[in-house]
Image 1 (spheres, rainbow, N blue to C red):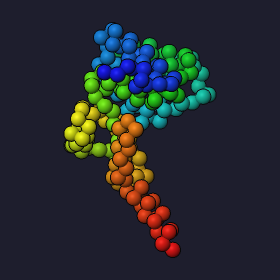
Image 2 (spheres, rainbow, N blue to C red):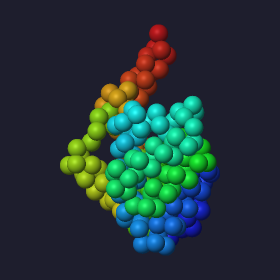
Image 3 (cartoon, rainbow, N blue to C red):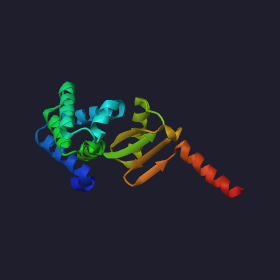
Image 4 (cartoon, rainbow, N blue to C red):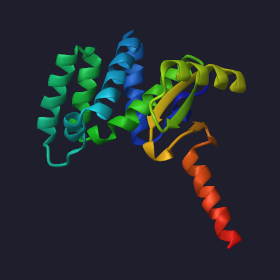
Length: 186
């Protein structure tokens, strides 16, 4: 297993490492991981929550009250609620998405998994996601945790990024490459 510090970096990495270590020490890693999955869903599906964490005009006190109410209503682990309060007090809620991603990398590393970022034009079905995970596992020789991102501009296909390797089979890229090739023909 590699050093956690090598997996995450920057401000988001430091916050993710702090909550990861706290959760691990308090045997709350699974609970915090589940809370973070809920937060990721809230970020993508709730415009109000997105505005709360991203707005520079909302005071840190109001952000803290808002995230405390959300954590309470959602039944989050106490560590998650406290962590959100610290982010609000330090005006770091805008980094929440990247902190969640860094935390996922730390959890995946602890499990011996590698993280793959998969961008698709539409949300993958459970069957598609499992098949992709199985194919990546056989290609990489280790378990793979998938971070799914939806980007409708891709039109179709996938972009898969594992570490520094990128596989881009998106229809958008193929059409862009065709357009470039056709410019040379004229």
